[in-house]
Length: 316
Length: 246
Ligand SMILES: Cc1cc2nc3c(=O)[nH]c(=O)nc-3n(C[C@H](O)[C@H](O)[C@H](O)COP(=O)(O)OP(=O)(O)OC[C@H]3O[C@@H](n4cnc5c(N)ncnc54)[C@H](O)[C@@H]3O)c2cc1C
Ligand SMILES: Nc1ncnc2c1ncn2[C@@H]1O[C@H](COP(=O)(O)O)[C@@H](O)[C@H]1O
Image (cartoon, rainbow over all chains, first blue to last red; front, side, top):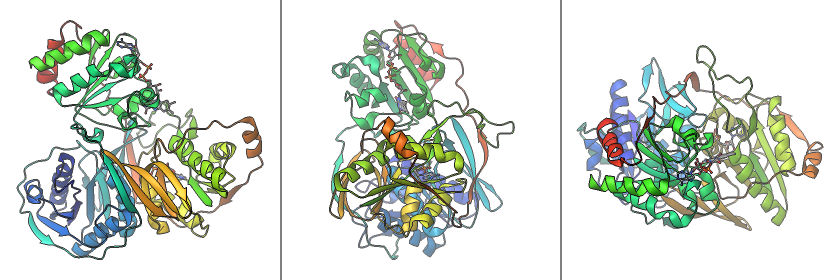
Protein backbone atom coordinates (compact mmCIF):
# COMPACT_ATOMS: atom_id res chain seq x y z
CA UNK A 1 0.00 0.00 0.00
CA UNK A 2 1.09 3.57 -0.75
CA UNK A 3 -0.19 6.14 1.77
CA UNK A 4 -0.46 9.81 0.85
CA UNK A 5 -0.98 12.24 3.71
CA UNK A 6 -3.16 15.00 2.25
CA UNK A 7 -3.01 18.38 3.91
CA UNK A 8 -6.03 20.63 3.51
CA UNK A 9 -6.97 24.17 4.33
CA UNK A 10 -10.50 24.58 5.64
CA UNK A 11 -11.48 21.30 4.04
CA UNK A 12 -10.10 22.12 0.59
CA UNK A 13 -7.15 20.57 -1.22
CA UNK A 14 -4.71 22.68 -3.17
CA UNK A 15 -3.27 21.64 -6.49
CA UNK A 16 0.07 20.48 -5.04
CA UNK A 17 -1.81 18.09 -2.74
CA UNK A 18 -3.75 16.59 -5.66
CA UNK A 19 -0.43 16.24 -7.49
CA UNK A 20 0.83 14.17 -4.58
CA UNK A 21 -2.26 11.94 -4.82
CA UNK A 22 -1.68 11.35 -8.54
CA UNK A 23 1.99 10.71 -7.76
CA UNK A 24 0.91 8.20 -5.11
CA UNK A 25 -1.37 6.36 -7.52
CA UNK A 26 1.36 6.15 -10.17
CA UNK A 27 3.82 4.88 -7.57
CA UNK A 28 1.28 2.33 -6.37
CA UNK A 29 0.78 1.12 -9.96
CA UNK A 30 4.52 0.60 -10.32
CA UNK A 31 4.54 -1.42 -7.12
CA UNK A 32 1.35 -3.30 -8.12
CA UNK A 33 -0.47 -2.10 -5.07
CA UNK A 34 -3.13 0.45 -4.10
CA UNK A 35 -3.00 4.10 -3.17
CA UNK A 36 -4.65 5.32 0.03
CA UNK A 37 -5.02 8.92 1.17
CA UNK A 38 -5.10 10.02 4.80
CA UNK A 39 -7.15 13.08 5.76
CA UNK A 40 -6.82 14.50 9.25
CA UNK A 41 -9.91 16.46 10.25
CA UNK A 42 -12.90 17.16 8.04
CA UNK A 43 -12.66 17.80 4.33
CA UNK A 44 -14.55 17.26 1.10
CA UNK A 45 -12.76 14.07 0.06
CA UNK A 46 -14.42 13.59 -3.34
CA UNK A 47 -11.47 15.05 -5.28
CA UNK A 48 -9.09 12.48 -3.78
CA UNK A 49 -10.65 9.56 -5.63
CA UNK A 50 -10.80 11.59 -8.82
CA UNK A 51 -7.05 12.20 -8.73
CA UNK A 52 -6.03 8.66 -7.83
CA UNK A 53 -6.86 7.55 -4.28
CA UNK A 54 -8.24 4.01 -4.28
CA UNK A 55 -9.17 4.48 -0.66
CA UNK A 56 -9.52 7.47 1.65
CA UNK A 57 -8.99 7.18 5.40
CA UNK A 58 -10.30 9.97 7.58
CA UNK A 59 -8.98 10.49 11.07
CA UNK A 60 -10.36 12.62 13.88
CA UNK A 61 -8.88 12.29 17.33
CA UNK A 62 -7.94 14.28 20.40
CA UNK A 63 -4.68 16.10 19.88
CA UNK A 64 -5.23 16.72 16.18
CA UNK A 65 -7.06 20.04 16.53
CA UNK A 66 -4.08 22.26 15.80
CA UNK A 67 -1.08 21.22 13.76
CA UNK A 68 1.78 19.77 15.80
CA UNK A 69 4.73 17.65 14.70
CA UNK A 70 4.38 15.07 17.46
CA UNK A 71 0.64 14.41 17.26
CA UNK A 72 0.43 14.56 13.47
CA UNK A 73 3.51 12.43 12.85
CA UNK A 74 2.24 9.76 15.24
CA UNK A 75 -1.13 9.79 13.44
CA UNK A 76 0.52 9.33 10.05
CA UNK A 77 3.06 6.72 11.15
CA UNK A 78 0.46 4.71 13.09
CA UNK A 79 -1.93 4.78 10.13
CA UNK A 80 0.86 3.60 7.83
CA UNK A 81 1.64 0.72 10.19
CA UNK A 82 -2.01 -0.22 10.62
CA UNK A 83 -2.75 -0.40 6.88
CA UNK A 84 0.67 -1.86 6.02
CA UNK A 85 1.86 1.06 3.88
CA UNK A 86 5.43 0.62 2.65
CA UNK A 87 5.59 4.01 0.94
CA UNK A 88 4.39 7.19 2.69
CA UNK A 89 4.13 10.38 0.64
CA UNK A 90 3.22 14.00 1.23
CA UNK A 91 3.46 17.21 -0.74
CA UNK A 92 6.62 19.17 0.10
CA UNK A 93 5.02 21.96 2.13
CA UNK A 94 6.22 23.73 5.27
CA UNK A 95 4.21 21.26 7.36
CA UNK A 96 5.71 18.35 5.48
CA UNK A 97 9.16 19.60 6.38
CA UNK A 98 8.03 19.55 10.02
CA UNK A 99 6.60 16.03 9.84
CA UNK A 100 8.64 14.09 7.32
CA UNK A 101 11.70 13.32 9.43
CA UNK A 102 9.64 12.37 12.47
CA UNK A 103 7.48 9.98 10.43
CA UNK A 104 10.59 8.44 8.86
CA UNK A 105 12.28 7.85 12.22
CA UNK A 106 9.11 6.34 13.67
CA UNK A 107 8.80 3.95 10.73
CA UNK A 108 12.58 3.33 10.58
CA UNK A 109 12.23 4.29 6.91
CA UNK A 110 14.49 5.61 4.18
CA UNK A 111 13.61 9.27 3.70
CA UNK A 112 14.02 11.98 1.11
CA UNK A 113 12.43 15.41 0.87
CA UNK A 114 11.44 17.40 -2.22
CA UNK A 115 11.48 14.54 -4.73
CA UNK A 116 11.38 16.06 -8.22
CA UNK A 117 10.63 13.04 -10.42
CA UNK A 118 8.41 10.00 -10.47
CA UNK A 119 10.13 7.06 -8.78
CA UNK A 120 11.93 4.28 -10.58
CA UNK A 121 11.55 0.91 -8.94
CA UNK A 122 14.81 -1.03 -8.91
CA UNK A 123 14.34 -4.32 -7.06
CA UNK A 124 13.49 -3.45 -3.48
CA UNK A 125 14.80 0.08 -3.90
CA UNK A 126 13.14 3.22 -5.17
CA UNK A 127 15.18 5.82 -7.06
CA UNK A 128 14.05 9.46 -7.18
CA UNK A 129 15.72 12.76 -7.98
CA UNK A 130 15.95 15.78 -5.71
CA UNK A 131 17.75 19.10 -6.13
CA UNK A 132 21.01 19.66 -4.24
CA UNK A 133 23.41 22.58 -3.84
CA UNK A 134 20.47 24.96 -4.15
CA UNK A 135 19.49 23.70 -7.56
CA UNK A 136 23.03 23.64 -8.94
CA UNK A 137 22.93 19.83 -9.20
CA UNK A 138 20.36 17.06 -9.16
CA UNK A 139 20.97 13.99 -7.03
CA UNK A 140 19.51 10.55 -7.73
CA UNK A 141 18.70 8.98 -4.39
CA UNK A 142 18.34 5.27 -3.99
CA UNK A 143 16.03 4.51 -1.07
CA UNK A 144 16.41 1.02 0.34
CA UNK A 145 14.88 -0.95 3.20
CA UNK A 146 11.33 -2.00 3.86
CA UNK A 147 9.67 1.42 4.14
CA UNK A 148 10.17 4.69 2.28
CA UNK A 149 8.97 8.17 3.25
CA UNK A 150 9.11 11.04 0.75
CA UNK A 151 7.82 14.54 0.17
CA UNK A 152 7.08 15.57 -3.41
CA UNK A 153 7.99 18.94 -4.87
CA UNK A 154 5.13 21.01 -6.23
CA UNK A 155 4.90 21.04 -10.05
CA UNK A 156 6.70 17.66 -10.31
CA UNK A 157 3.74 16.16 -12.16
CA UNK A 158 0.27 17.39 -13.07
CA UNK A 159 -2.77 16.16 -11.17
CA UNK A 160 -4.52 13.66 -13.46
CA UNK A 161 -8.13 12.59 -13.33
CA UNK A 162 -7.44 8.92 -12.83
CA UNK A 163 -10.88 8.18 -11.40
CA UNK A 164 -9.99 5.71 -8.63
CA UNK A 165 -12.63 4.38 -6.22
CA UNK A 166 -11.97 6.83 -3.41
CA UNK A 167 -14.10 4.89 -0.93
CA UNK A 168 -13.96 6.65 2.42
CA UNK A 169 -13.44 4.94 5.76
CA UNK A 170 -12.90 6.42 9.21
CA UNK A 171 -9.79 5.03 10.85
CA UNK A 172 -8.78 5.11 14.46
CA UNK A 173 -5.18 5.00 15.62
CA UNK A 174 -3.23 6.05 18.71
CA UNK A 175 -2.20 9.72 18.61
CA UNK A 176 0.52 11.29 20.80
CA UNK A 177 -0.17 14.43 22.78
CA UNK A 178 0.83 17.62 20.95
CA UNK A 179 4.11 19.17 22.08
CA UNK A 180 3.38 22.76 21.10
CA UNK A 181 0.35 24.96 21.57
CA UNK A 182 -0.79 27.16 18.68
CA UNK A 183 -1.75 30.57 19.99
CA UNK A 184 -2.26 32.51 16.79
CA UNK A 185 -2.06 32.53 13.03
CA UNK A 186 -1.40 35.30 10.61
CA UNK A 187 -2.07 34.17 7.09
CA UNK A 188 -1.58 36.69 4.37
CA UNK A 189 -4.86 38.08 3.25
CA UNK A 190 -3.44 38.12 -0.28
CA UNK A 191 -5.56 36.80 -3.11
CA UNK A 192 -2.35 35.50 -4.62
CA UNK A 193 -1.08 31.93 -4.38
CA UNK A 194 1.71 31.46 -1.80
CA UNK A 195 5.13 31.58 -3.48
CA UNK A 196 6.13 27.93 -3.09
CA UNK A 197 3.10 26.83 -5.07
CA UNK A 198 2.68 29.77 -7.48
CA UNK A 199 2.78 28.92 -11.19
CA UNK A 200 3.39 32.50 -12.27
CA UNK A 201 5.78 34.78 -10.40
CA UNK A 202 6.66 38.43 -10.99
CA UNK A 203 9.85 39.30 -9.13
CA UNK A 204 11.72 42.57 -8.85
CA UNK A 205 15.05 43.74 -7.45
CA UNK A 206 17.08 46.76 -6.57
CA UNK A 207 16.57 48.15 -10.07
CA UNK A 208 13.18 49.34 -8.79
CA UNK A 209 14.95 52.15 -6.89
CA UNK A 210 12.47 52.21 -4.01
CA UNK A 211 9.35 50.64 -2.51
CA UNK A 212 7.14 53.46 -3.80
CA UNK A 213 7.66 52.16 -7.34
CA UNK A 214 6.18 48.70 -6.77
CA UNK A 215 2.79 49.66 -8.22
CA UNK A 216 3.87 48.66 -11.74
CA UNK A 217 5.00 45.26 -10.44
CA UNK A 218 1.67 44.67 -8.67
CA UNK A 219 -0.23 45.68 -11.82
CA UNK A 220 1.78 43.27 -13.95
CA UNK A 221 1.20 40.49 -11.41
CA UNK A 222 -2.53 41.23 -11.23
CA UNK A 223 -2.85 41.17 -15.02
CA UNK A 224 -1.93 37.46 -15.07
CA UNK A 225 -2.82 36.39 -11.52
CA UNK A 226 0.83 36.00 -10.55
CA UNK A 227 2.47 36.07 -7.12
CA UNK A 228 5.04 38.78 -6.38
CA UNK A 229 8.59 38.06 -5.21
CA UNK A 230 11.83 40.00 -4.73
CA UNK A 231 15.59 39.72 -4.39
CA UNK A 232 17.24 39.57 -1.00
CA UNK A 233 18.52 43.15 -0.64
CA UNK A 234 15.01 44.36 -1.39
CA UNK A 235 13.62 42.34 1.52
CA UNK A 236 16.57 43.15 3.77
CA UNK A 237 16.07 46.88 3.36
CA UNK A 238 12.38 46.50 4.10
CA UNK A 239 11.15 47.56 0.66
CA UNK A 240 9.18 44.32 0.51
CA UNK A 241 8.11 41.76 3.14
CA UNK A 242 10.58 39.00 4.02
CA UNK A 243 8.38 36.20 2.75
CA UNK A 244 8.80 37.53 -0.80
CA UNK A 245 12.58 36.95 -0.74
CA UNK A 246 13.52 34.19 -3.18
CA UNK A 247 16.91 32.59 -3.65
CA UNK A 248 19.38 30.42 -1.88
CA UNK A 249 18.68 31.92 1.53
CA UNK A 250 15.03 32.69 0.82
CA UNK A 251 12.22 30.69 -0.72
CA UNK A 252 13.19 28.28 -3.50
CA UNK A 253 10.56 28.26 -6.22
CA UNK A 254 9.84 26.40 -9.45
CA UNK A 255 7.01 28.20 -11.22
CA UNK A 256 6.12 27.78 -14.89
CA UNK A 257 6.97 31.41 -15.56
CA UNK A 258 9.34 33.73 -13.68
CA UNK A 259 9.68 37.43 -14.55
CA UNK A 260 12.93 38.91 -13.17
CA UNK A 261 12.72 42.69 -13.30
CA UNK A 262 15.67 44.86 -12.31
CA UNK A 263 17.46 41.87 -10.76
CA UNK A 264 21.10 41.32 -11.69
CA UNK A 265 21.04 37.52 -11.45
CA UNK A 266 23.59 36.86 -8.71
CA UNK A 267 24.35 33.17 -8.26
CA UNK A 268 22.57 33.11 -4.88
CA UNK A 269 19.45 34.53 -6.47
CA UNK A 270 19.58 32.10 -9.39
CA UNK A 271 19.98 29.18 -7.00
CA UNK A 272 16.43 29.67 -5.78
CA UNK A 273 14.75 30.31 -9.13
CA UNK A 274 16.67 28.38 -11.78
CA UNK A 275 14.20 25.50 -11.68
CA UNK A 276 11.55 27.78 -13.17
CA UNK A 277 10.31 26.43 -16.48
CA UNK A 278 10.52 29.73 -18.37
CA UNK A 279 12.44 32.83 -17.27
CA UNK A 280 11.89 36.33 -18.68
CA UNK A 281 14.49 38.95 -17.74
CA UNK A 282 13.96 42.70 -17.97
CA UNK A 283 17.15 44.64 -17.29
CA UNK A 284 18.71 47.77 -18.76
CA UNK A 285 22.24 46.36 -18.52
CA UNK A 286 23.01 44.05 -21.47
CA UNK A 287 25.78 42.47 -19.37
CA UNK A 288 23.49 41.52 -16.47
CA UNK A 289 24.30 37.88 -15.62
CA UNK A 290 20.60 37.02 -15.49
CA UNK A 291 20.39 37.13 -19.30
CA UNK A 292 22.55 33.99 -19.39
CA UNK A 293 19.94 32.09 -17.38
CA UNK A 294 16.90 33.38 -19.24
CA UNK A 295 14.67 32.16 -22.06
CA UNK A 296 13.45 35.60 -23.09
CA UNK A 297 15.13 38.93 -22.47
CA UNK A 298 14.20 42.57 -22.79
CA UNK A 299 17.10 44.99 -22.51
CA UNK A 300 15.47 48.28 -21.56
CA UNK A 301 14.50 50.60 -18.74
CA UNK A 302 12.00 48.70 -16.62
CA UNK A 303 10.01 51.84 -15.89
CA UNK A 304 9.21 52.10 -19.63
CA UNK A 305 8.78 48.49 -20.47
CA UNK A 306 6.84 47.02 -17.54
CA UNK A 307 3.72 49.18 -18.11
CA UNK A 308 3.89 48.30 -21.83
CA UNK A 309 4.08 44.60 -20.98
CA UNK A 310 1.12 44.91 -18.62
CA UNK A 311 -0.90 46.64 -21.33
CA UNK A 312 0.00 43.94 -23.86
CA UNK A 313 -1.03 41.22 -21.42
CA UNK A 314 -4.34 42.90 -20.74
CA UNK A 315 -5.03 43.16 -24.46
CA UNK A 316 -4.73 39.40 -24.49
CA UNK B 1 20.04 27.65 30.27
CA UNK B 2 21.96 25.02 28.29
CA UNK B 3 21.72 25.49 24.56
CA UNK B 4 22.95 23.31 21.70
CA UNK B 5 23.37 24.46 18.11
CA UNK B 6 23.82 21.93 15.30
CA UNK B 7 26.15 23.34 12.68
CA UNK B 8 27.04 22.01 9.28
CA UNK B 9 29.74 22.82 6.77
CA UNK B 10 28.62 23.64 3.23
CA UNK B 11 30.25 24.85 0.02
CA UNK B 12 30.15 28.65 -0.13
CA UNK B 13 27.16 30.14 -1.87
CA UNK B 14 28.97 31.19 -5.07
CA UNK B 15 30.59 27.77 -5.54
CA UNK B 16 30.29 26.24 -8.97
CA UNK B 17 29.30 22.62 -8.77
CA UNK B 18 31.03 20.23 -11.18
CA UNK B 19 30.81 16.45 -11.31
CA UNK B 20 33.50 13.81 -11.50
CA UNK B 21 33.81 11.83 -14.72
CA UNK B 22 31.02 9.31 -14.20
CA UNK B 23 28.71 11.61 -12.24
CA UNK B 24 28.89 9.52 -9.07
CA UNK B 25 30.16 12.43 -7.01
CA UNK B 26 30.74 16.16 -7.10
CA UNK B 27 34.25 17.53 -7.52
CA UNK B 28 35.38 18.78 -4.15
CA UNK B 29 38.81 20.00 -5.26
CA UNK B 30 38.90 23.76 -5.07
CA UNK B 31 35.56 24.11 -3.29
CA UNK B 32 35.61 26.61 -0.46
CA UNK B 33 33.52 25.79 2.57
CA UNK B 34 31.59 27.93 5.00
CA UNK B 35 29.46 27.53 8.06
CA UNK B 36 25.91 26.92 6.79
CA UNK B 37 24.31 30.41 6.75
CA UNK B 38 21.11 29.41 8.59
CA UNK B 39 23.15 27.83 11.38
CA UNK B 40 25.56 30.74 11.65
CA UNK B 41 23.40 33.80 11.05
CA UNK B 42 20.20 32.79 12.77
CA UNK B 43 20.50 29.74 15.05
CA UNK B 44 23.85 30.47 16.65
CA UNK B 45 23.28 34.19 17.06
CA UNK B 46 19.85 33.76 18.68
CA UNK B 47 21.35 31.23 21.10
CA UNK B 48 24.12 33.69 22.00
CA UNK B 49 21.63 36.52 22.50
CA UNK B 50 19.64 34.37 24.91
CA UNK B 51 22.77 33.38 26.76
CA UNK B 52 23.77 37.03 27.08
CA UNK B 53 20.33 37.90 28.44
CA UNK B 54 19.71 34.90 30.66
CA UNK B 55 23.04 33.17 31.29
CA UNK B 56 24.02 29.57 30.64
CA UNK B 57 26.07 28.02 27.88
CA UNK B 58 26.02 27.54 24.12
CA UNK B 59 27.55 24.36 22.73
CA UNK B 60 27.88 23.70 19.00
CA UNK B 61 27.89 20.22 17.52
CA UNK B 62 28.95 19.01 14.11
CA UNK B 63 29.09 15.60 12.48
CA UNK B 64 32.14 15.51 10.26
CA UNK B 65 35.87 14.92 9.92
CA UNK B 66 38.76 17.04 11.19
CA UNK B 67 38.46 19.17 8.03
CA UNK B 68 35.39 20.70 9.68
CA UNK B 69 37.34 22.12 12.63
CA UNK B 70 37.85 25.37 10.74
CA UNK B 71 34.12 26.13 10.56
CA UNK B 72 33.67 24.91 14.13
CA UNK B 73 36.34 27.43 15.20
CA UNK B 74 34.36 30.13 13.45
CA UNK B 75 31.31 29.28 15.56
CA UNK B 76 33.51 29.45 18.66
CA UNK B 77 34.88 32.80 17.48
CA UNK B 78 31.37 34.17 17.10
CA UNK B 79 30.79 33.22 20.73
CA UNK B 80 29.92 29.56 21.38
CA UNK B 81 31.50 28.22 24.59
CA UNK B 82 32.57 24.79 23.41
CA UNK B 83 32.09 22.31 20.63
CA UNK B 84 31.45 18.64 20.02
CA UNK B 85 32.55 17.02 16.80
CA UNK B 86 31.15 13.56 16.09
CA UNK B 87 33.95 12.03 14.10
CA UNK B 88 32.12 10.55 11.10
CA UNK B 89 31.38 11.57 7.52
CA UNK B 90 27.78 12.79 7.33
CA UNK B 91 26.18 10.29 4.95
CA UNK B 92 22.50 11.16 5.31
CA UNK B 93 20.18 13.36 7.36
CA UNK B 94 18.98 10.28 9.25
CA UNK B 95 22.51 9.21 10.18
CA UNK B 96 23.48 12.75 11.22
CA UNK B 97 20.35 13.14 13.37
CA UNK B 98 20.94 9.77 15.05
CA UNK B 99 24.57 10.58 15.78
CA UNK B 100 23.73 14.00 17.22
CA UNK B 101 21.01 12.45 19.38
CA UNK B 102 23.36 9.74 20.65
CA UNK B 103 26.06 12.27 21.47
CA UNK B 104 23.76 14.71 23.30
CA UNK B 105 20.79 12.87 24.76
CA UNK B 106 22.28 12.98 28.25
CA UNK B 107 23.27 16.63 27.88
CA UNK B 108 20.00 18.02 29.25
CA UNK B 109 19.93 20.86 26.73
CA UNK B 110 16.99 23.22 27.08
CA UNK B 111 16.93 24.40 23.48
CA UNK B 112 18.40 22.51 20.51
CA UNK B 113 18.81 24.54 17.33
CA UNK B 114 19.23 23.46 13.73
CA UNK B 115 19.23 25.66 10.64
CA UNK B 116 16.19 25.73 8.37
CA UNK B 117 18.19 23.72 5.87
CA UNK B 118 21.74 23.06 4.83
CA UNK B 119 22.46 24.88 1.59
CA UNK B 120 24.17 21.82 0.11
CA UNK B 121 21.65 19.01 0.50
CA UNK B 122 18.73 21.35 1.21
CA UNK B 123 16.87 18.51 2.81
CA UNK B 124 15.39 20.33 5.77
CA UNK B 125 15.05 16.93 7.37
CA UNK B 126 17.73 16.69 10.06
CA UNK B 127 15.93 18.85 12.63
CA UNK B 128 12.68 16.92 12.65
CA UNK B 129 14.53 13.61 12.73
CA UNK B 130 16.64 14.83 15.65
CA UNK B 131 13.51 15.96 17.50
CA UNK B 132 12.06 12.49 17.06
CA UNK B 133 15.23 10.71 18.22
CA UNK B 134 15.32 12.98 21.27
CA UNK B 135 11.56 12.62 21.83
CA UNK B 136 11.16 16.41 22.04
CA UNK B 137 8.64 18.91 20.66
CA UNK B 138 9.72 20.55 17.41
CA UNK B 139 9.11 23.98 15.94
CA UNK B 140 10.18 24.40 12.32
CA UNK B 141 11.22 27.58 10.51
CA UNK B 142 11.31 29.82 13.57
CA UNK B 143 11.59 33.50 12.62
CA UNK B 144 11.17 35.02 16.09
CA UNK B 145 11.55 33.65 19.61
CA UNK B 146 11.05 34.99 23.13
CA UNK B 147 11.89 32.82 26.11
CA UNK B 148 10.48 33.42 29.54
CA UNK B 149 11.12 30.86 32.28
CA UNK B 150 10.48 27.42 30.84
CA UNK B 151 8.30 28.59 27.99
CA UNK B 152 9.26 29.84 24.56
CA UNK B 153 6.89 31.80 22.35
CA UNK B 154 7.90 31.31 18.74
CA UNK B 155 6.70 32.73 15.46
CA UNK B 156 7.21 30.24 12.67
CA UNK B 157 6.77 30.36 8.90
CA UNK B 158 3.90 28.27 7.55
CA UNK B 159 2.38 27.99 4.06
CA UNK B 160 1.25 31.46 3.15
CA UNK B 161 1.85 33.14 6.51
CA UNK B 162 3.10 32.74 10.05
CA UNK B 163 1.90 30.97 13.16
CA UNK B 164 2.71 31.70 16.79
CA UNK B 165 3.18 28.75 19.11
CA UNK B 166 4.08 28.20 22.74
CA UNK B 167 6.39 25.36 23.65
CA UNK B 168 7.89 24.24 26.97
CA UNK B 169 11.63 23.57 27.20
CA UNK B 170 13.29 21.30 26.26
CA UNK B 171 12.53 21.43 22.54
CA UNK B 172 14.12 21.46 19.08
CA UNK B 173 13.75 24.28 16.58
CA UNK B 174 14.95 25.05 13.08
CA UNK B 175 16.04 28.62 12.50
CA UNK B 176 14.81 30.72 9.57
CA UNK B 177 15.57 34.25 8.45
CA UNK B 178 14.47 36.82 11.01
CA UNK B 179 15.37 34.85 14.14
CA UNK B 180 18.52 36.97 14.60
CA UNK B 181 20.97 39.18 12.72
CA UNK B 182 24.30 37.91 11.43
CA UNK B 183 27.33 38.69 13.65
CA UNK B 184 30.87 39.09 12.39
CA UNK B 185 33.49 37.56 14.72
CA UNK B 186 35.93 40.11 16.12
CA UNK B 187 39.65 39.70 16.81
CA UNK B 188 39.13 38.94 20.49
CA UNK B 189 36.61 36.23 19.61
CA UNK B 190 38.99 34.70 17.11
CA UNK B 191 41.84 34.65 19.68
CA UNK B 192 39.61 33.18 22.38
CA UNK B 193 38.29 30.52 20.02
CA UNK B 194 41.77 29.04 19.80
CA UNK B 195 41.61 28.06 23.46
CA UNK B 196 38.05 26.74 23.49
CA UNK B 197 37.67 22.96 23.45
CA UNK B 198 36.45 20.87 20.50
CA UNK B 199 35.51 17.53 22.02
CA UNK B 200 35.87 14.82 19.42
CA UNK B 201 33.57 11.86 20.07
CA UNK B 202 33.01 8.57 18.24
CA UNK B 203 29.74 8.16 16.41
CA UNK B 204 26.92 6.00 17.68
CA UNK B 205 25.54 3.38 15.36
CA UNK B 206 23.63 4.72 12.36
CA UNK B 207 22.61 3.35 9.02
CA UNK B 208 22.09 5.13 5.77
CA UNK B 209 19.35 3.89 3.49
CA UNK B 210 19.05 6.98 1.31
CA UNK B 211 22.19 6.90 -0.82
CA UNK B 212 23.03 9.20 -3.73
CA UNK B 213 23.71 6.86 -6.64
CA UNK B 214 24.38 9.57 -9.21
CA UNK B 215 24.41 13.32 -9.78
CA UNK B 216 23.49 15.29 -12.87
CA UNK B 217 23.73 18.96 -13.68
CA UNK B 218 20.56 20.83 -14.60
CA UNK B 219 20.11 21.27 -18.33
CA UNK B 220 21.36 24.68 -19.31
CA UNK B 221 18.96 27.09 -20.94
CA UNK B 222 19.05 27.19 -24.72
CA UNK B 223 19.81 30.47 -26.44
CA UNK B 224 17.98 33.46 -25.06
CA UNK B 225 15.53 35.28 -27.34
CA UNK B 226 15.86 39.04 -27.05
CA UNK B 227 12.64 40.95 -27.57
CA UNK B 228 12.28 44.49 -28.91
CA UNK B 229 11.26 46.68 -25.94
CA UNK B 230 8.72 48.42 -28.17
CA UNK B 231 7.02 45.16 -29.04
CA UNK B 232 5.74 43.63 -25.82
CA UNK B 233 2.88 42.08 -27.86
CA UNK B 234 5.54 39.81 -29.35
CA UNK B 235 6.70 38.71 -25.88
CA UNK B 236 3.13 37.94 -24.87
CA UNK B 237 2.61 35.95 -28.09
CA UNK B 238 5.79 33.92 -27.50
CA UNK B 239 4.85 33.19 -23.90
CA UNK B 240 1.46 31.96 -25.09
CA UNK B 241 2.27 30.15 -28.29
CA UNK B 242 5.90 29.08 -28.02
CA UNK B 243 6.54 28.64 -24.29
CA UNK B 244 2.85 27.87 -23.57
CA UNK B 245 3.06 29.21 -20.03
CA UNK B 246 0.25 31.75 -20.24
C1 LIG C 1 25.49 34.09 1.51
C2 LIG C 1 24.65 34.91 0.58
C3 LIG C 1 23.34 34.50 0.33
C4 LIG C 1 22.53 35.25 -0.54
N1 LIG C 1 21.25 34.82 -0.78
C5 LIG C 1 20.49 35.52 -1.66
C6 LIG C 1 19.16 35.09 -1.97
O1 LIG C 1 18.65 34.11 -1.42
N2 LIG C 1 18.44 35.81 -2.86
C7 LIG C 1 18.93 36.93 -3.48
O2 LIG C 1 18.21 37.53 -4.30
N3 LIG C 1 20.17 37.36 -3.20
C8 LIG C 1 20.96 36.69 -2.30
N4 LIG C 1 22.20 37.16 -2.01
C9 LIG C 1 22.60 38.47 -2.55
C10 LIG C 1 23.09 38.39 -3.98
O3 LIG C 1 24.48 38.09 -3.98
C11 LIG C 1 22.90 39.74 -4.69
O4 LIG C 1 23.56 40.75 -3.96
C12 LIG C 1 21.43 40.15 -4.86
O5 LIG C 1 20.70 39.09 -5.43
C13 LIG C 1 21.33 41.37 -5.75
O6 LIG C 1 20.00 41.85 -5.76
P1 LIG C 1 19.45 42.66 -7.00
O7 LIG C 1 19.68 41.89 -8.24
O8 LIG C 1 18.07 43.07 -6.68
O9 LIG C 1 20.32 44.00 -6.95
P2 LIG C 1 21.53 44.47 -7.87
O10 LIG C 1 22.61 43.45 -7.92
O11 LIG C 1 21.87 45.83 -7.39
O12 LIG C 1 20.93 44.53 -9.32
C14 LIG C 1 20.00 45.49 -9.76
C15 LIG C 1 19.79 45.26 -11.24
O13 LIG C 1 18.79 46.14 -11.71
C16 LIG C 1 19.18 46.64 -12.97
N5 LIG C 1 18.52 47.94 -13.13
C17 LIG C 1 18.75 49.09 -12.43
N6 LIG C 1 17.93 50.06 -12.85
C18 LIG C 1 17.16 49.54 -13.84
C19 LIG C 1 16.14 50.06 -14.68
N7 LIG C 1 15.72 51.33 -14.56
N8 LIG C 1 15.60 49.26 -15.59
C20 LIG C 1 16.02 47.96 -15.73
N9 LIG C 1 16.97 47.41 -14.97
C21 LIG C 1 17.55 48.21 -14.04
C22 LIG C 1 20.67 46.74 -12.92
O14 LIG C 1 21.22 46.69 -14.23
C23 LIG C 1 21.05 45.51 -12.08
O15 LIG C 1 21.28 44.39 -12.91
C24 LIG C 1 23.03 36.43 -1.15
C25 LIG C 1 24.34 36.83 -0.89
C26 LIG C 1 25.15 36.09 -0.04
C27 LIG C 1 26.55 36.54 0.20
N1 LIG D 1 26.85 17.24 9.55
C1 LIG D 1 26.07 17.97 10.36
N2 LIG D 1 26.48 18.22 11.63
C2 LIG D 1 25.69 18.95 12.47
N3 LIG D 1 24.52 19.47 12.12
C3 LIG D 1 24.07 19.25 10.89
C4 LIG D 1 24.81 18.49 9.94
N4 LIG D 1 24.11 18.44 8.79
C5 LIG D 1 22.96 19.15 9.00
N5 LIG D 1 22.94 19.64 10.27
C6 LIG D 1 21.89 20.48 10.88
O1 LIG D 1 20.65 20.22 10.24
C7 LIG D 1 20.15 21.39 9.61
C8 LIG D 1 19.35 21.03 8.39
O2 LIG D 1 20.12 20.32 7.48
P1 LIG D 1 19.46 19.53 6.25
O3 LIG D 1 18.49 18.56 6.83
O4 LIG D 1 20.63 18.88 5.58
O5 LIG D 1 18.81 20.57 5.38
C9 LIG D 1 21.37 22.26 9.38
O6 LIG D 1 21.02 23.62 9.25
C10 LIG D 1 22.18 21.96 10.63
O7 LIG D 1 21.69 22.69 11.75
